[in-house]
Length: 273
Image (cartoon, rainbow, N blue to C red; front, side, top):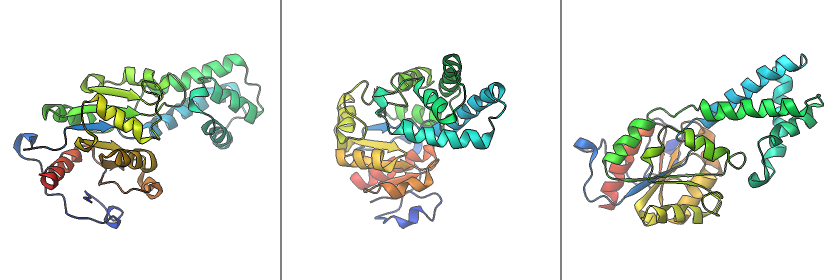
């Protein structure tokens, strides 16, 4: 297994067959490339969705504090944690935009009426869609990969509730750079928790799975299922350092900087030549 490490004591814990050879050839073009396409996860890979969600929650808190004098940060966070557990336990396809704040009203015991639920839901979704925190280097990376004649795909989960992920992707500035964009259980019936979703996305790119490199942030979903589908994998570890402990399959590479994909491609080109 190849391991790309720009940091890192954590990465050194992974067994390493050979070190990354170095920068890409002049012009960023490789010879006899075996990797023909790259499929990206969306949340915490192309965007920092954790920070975006945190900021959206802060916006809701600000509004709640206008409505309820007793609402402080500690109380809000305590209720939020309980609601999140209830919300996460539900089938994503049965959730809806207002549901989270309906549960919040139950847990808080506050007089949060239908109008307030609508307002909080709108504040949260609007922030999530319109104020995304993009991963540094995404636009440049996608541009360079396209110039290398690689096919570019996107495979993401169904999101917090149906419709939200599609509205988010519609606002994502780099949509035109993707040959295929798949929302699991929306565009395709398969969940991202199944290798079949990864196989189907590769097929839509008209590629074999062993011609594809998948990059994502969640080991037990992105790495395990991509590897079981037959793909090479990158764990993008910029936002979720501890998550690698939860996967049964080790990633082929771990990176923290999006632009290190070129070094991964160079190493794969040398290994597979």
